[in-house]
Image 1 (cartoon, rainbow, N blue to C red):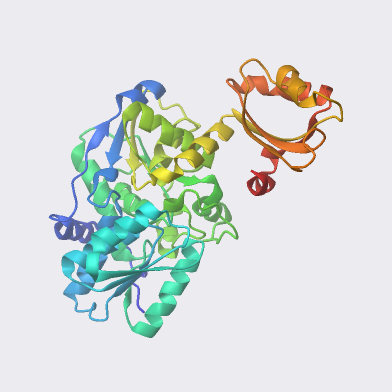
Image 2 (cartoon, rainbow, N blue to C red):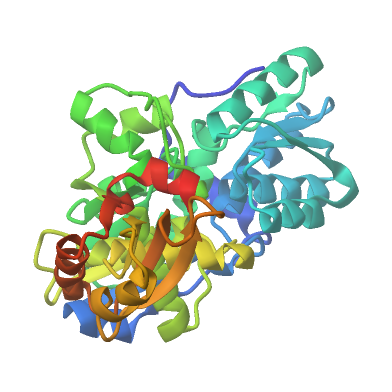
Length: 421
């Protein structure tokens, strides 16, 4: 297995990548969002990479890398990749178009929708293998396969030609506007897209402030920048699957570490809130990673008033079966959903009293389960309560404690809550 992670990209090689991708990728809109512009009093533009043929920017790097290997005669033994979904779709698309055999390793946790999309784009030219719970476990298995098969490994981000392909997105943005871009918000997983943006903007638009945005549960770039060395996280939350990477690419980190203006972390619950907001208000269906840049606008610690802001919408490969989980995480984040272990006093009518005297007028029980099915009047129960206003929580908690019902607040112990609820 051989990967090129030594030299940095040049604008000439990025322009060459643009030529390679001319009849493959869409020139996606740089679309002004009037709602977001009004919301933060800025000029907010969305780079709509969710409108690519594979519904993410990943097709750029994947096709550029594979086409170059194909031109060099290095695809006879096929190609291999590891991906949580979007890179796999780009690779599958390239394999089909170039008639190359591909073996695609994906985590067992990959949403079904992404698996089906990969199979659709690759058709008879690809084989999907599921392995591990995280991208990193999956990647290691893919590399082992390459070592035995002699196939070429298509790294999803830590590769010069992958970065050059992603960098064509940055070239497009600058070609689509004559106005100065003050800020660009970039979602980060392994850092390939960020490295491409940095490479182009540092030369052609050095005054633009580049904001890297990661999910709270997988903030590997932020940790690495803070440590001054590329650092592997011991544990990650894989919910934002398109950006759930334990360690960013070594090459990507070297390119980006001194050129990022800020590295932001967004709570997964905030991402879910944003997903629902853009769906309900903008009719946009995004995947969690695709909503990262928009989610960061609300919590950015600088005044964006009057500024020209670009948010990269990285993808829209979401699975509709995740909707309930997205709604749940959003409610928890906004303080509207609370779970308790409730102990019922050993007296008749305790459950009725709980409903009448503990719950507020606008509170609603959305989950109820006894811990002991055969002793319901005296047993503890797990209770989920939805509030109309987060400010109602303190009153609810006080009434629960004063009347002797409170036993444990599960929201403060997410690991325990995941086992009980």
